Length: 140
Image (cartoon, rainbow, N blue to C red; front, side, top):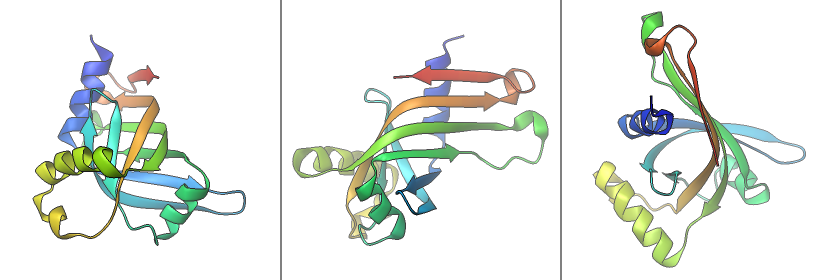
């Protein structure tokens, strides 16, 4: 099995992540819609700089998160835990990422928020359809 293809296919098929950001004295989680760029192994999100999690991301670029649908049958459980570094994109990088994000979420064109890139460094995927508790890994 090609583990990275299996993980990439899962990331392409989903659209909502939970990220967790922290500083020395605070931590916070947030749910965000995302688009996935398999060539860069990056997730792109839109979120306001004034949000609590964005303020923490500005202080500390290291984040973690999850992507998990909510099946009712245990055999259908699939999900990803990830680590990465986040940065707010500007100029040409932002234009390219926005085009990808708007393609997946056309209504986002009407939202006034910057786009951010989560450069993935580690992914652990659990996929019970491959066997109960089956884990797949990817590292940068």
